[in-house]
Length: 107
Image (cartoon, rainbow, N blue to C red; front, side, top):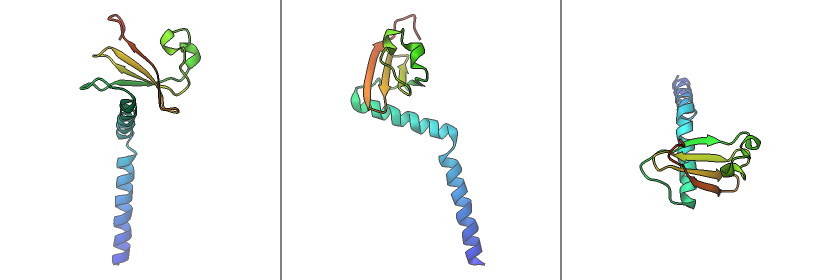
């Protein structure tokens, strides 16, 4: 009887922690924090602001824009709108590809 209850309890906690760990919103927050930490190891980042993060999915369509001329598939774009800074980061190589300031009319 005790073994059956232990198995049920272990199964319950296993499912609970699986759901908690794989909650899409929590996964997104963890991935964003990890990305910001990686970029923060390479350069000083604006403090007190959480960046908007985008992934380059079609670099060919961006090639005519100077900021994205060296962009590759799966590069990350961190946009700090309050600080007016945009960063192109390549996770595969752990490199900053480009950094630019946003002009007042860009957001």
